[in-house]
Image 1 (tube, rainbow, N blue to C red):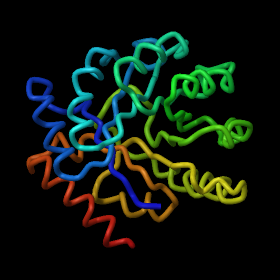
Image 2: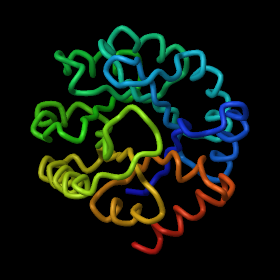
Image 3: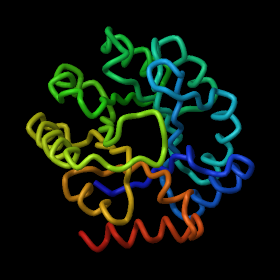
Image 4: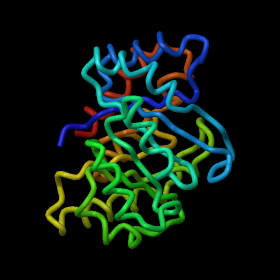
Length: 226
């Protein structure tokens, strides 16, 4: 599967958010990752549907996928609003979805792709019953809540085990995304472990180099491991 980069703008300059996101998409990012936090499931508050709607024209112009990661309690209450705002893929946490099959079906009934994710301490076994129903699985390689954190080394083995699970289930069409602490220093390791979608925040937006140059550096690091 081709490797895709999905910028997360938590560490971007919000006074220039449209410009920075547009630059990332023009530099070849295939997706845009929107982190939605409620201050309850994770210790931070971020953006809502209005921001997704505002960014939708940028992703449409670039032909990029707009994905929304709901780090919230009771995600089923917010899914319709984000679908209406323009999300194309909605990701929910196994930890906040006691009726996970129903929540996945809710997303699909709205005509969207469905993804599931799990925190670093949550075992992969919690995904076994839904792997055949989803379009994407997201492995959190930091504890969610803030941008700029350091990649947890144990995540690499977890990614490898998940890729093996997908292969054994003949589910290699399911995207394996990783989010947290991704940089040119470790992106090759993460891709080699089996990830094909990389959420990248600080290494794109919070750096002395420009957004386009940072994406090029990530691409070069991936190519160096291929």
